[in-house]
Image (cartoon, rainbow, N blue to C red):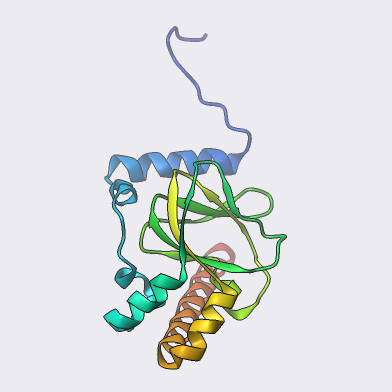
Length: 178
């Protein structure tokens, strides 16, 4: 017997239902409060340890771009050419079968595999309007020539971030198989 006034959400996949439920929990506990606040580049993990002058020089390389909600920012099938520093909004990395792999908020970077010329592993979509500082691989190489110490620091930070992702993936595999 169907109750009057009861609304049931229908999702195309189990993963879409889980994504929605997770988002509801995070939202109800204030987890999305940061997406409307502009992040400063000094808080970016990829840029940790750079001097204020190096940060200023690095930021001048980039272009500020705005992506509407629902826009595919990175297509995994395309060659890696740009890295994005999320200034405002929220974006998600999604597998090729549209499973959300991670969500990024202001102060995070994505597309960083372009710095080491490695193939992309996921699409990235704007969940909300997203404002990013976009830096091409060519611009980064030019920065390396004029700011060798800062570029080395960025590459070390990238190695630390990638190592953390490997540890997290290993822990998830252990959890699923243990």
